[in-house]
Length: 342
Ligand code: PHE
Image (cartoon, rainbow, N blue to C red):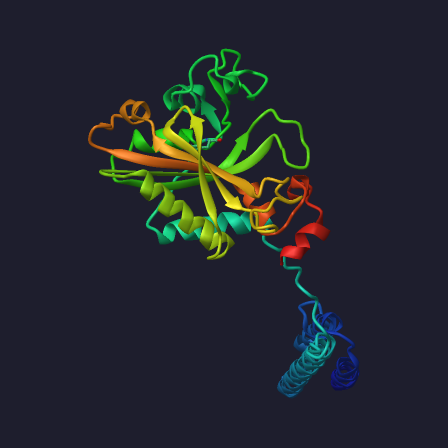
């Protein structure tokens, strides 16, 4: 029995030292030390020994067990270390390898002028208001004093959503005026940039969807002078301090008096050229003093308060600002075009 134990010791220690991996090592541990292992098999025969021999063999068996346990522990540590080292080697980070460039987008030219306009007006104490793009005709037309029979109400001009022509895609940002005034009493000072829709054929200067920014100021004693001052500040900030503006009489149903605002052609300085189509001026926005009927319709007394409003096309501003000759470029998402604004 002593020999058997010695054999087990020699054989197991060798095998353990040579174990190639942790799984193999565990199998060896079970093979030698497990309940059905070779050591247990020997120990089961202890009973057949003489009382004299039993403790000696028992002691030897314990030594063998301890030796095997120790060997398993050592080998396990060695294997684990080797594994860790290999991992460290394989997963080593080469910080000198050039990184992958992150693709950074560019702001859209429309967004650039949008942000600029918002900044300019926030600087003058305005707040940004929002209104729905699917609008009630009541807000886009009736309460803006746009009567039945006005061309803009024709189904050929406007995208109606319901057959009764009571809901449509808003064709201007002006309904936001009404939405703001019915909730907020003066002083009111807001701008409202957003999308608008008209049944226009797409060409170099038209699109069925485009962007406007509405402006509205209502308070005691607001005059056309405030309108001119405010719009001059905006246009000079956008186009430079030398910008020359012209306020021309016009008609809008919801302002009285109304005007259109032109800037002098930056190309020919008023002489007339190809850019301004010989006019010397380029129209940039519509504006006017809020019609008393619109104020009254929102519960604001026109005897006590007055206001001005304006609406400016953002595509037109962007096109002028960046010398973009075709409106379609703004909506085609051609990266060769968009990249120029990064
Ligand atoms: N809503 C008008 C348009 O789309 C512009 C405008 C706004 C005119 C506010 C006067 C006052 O043409």
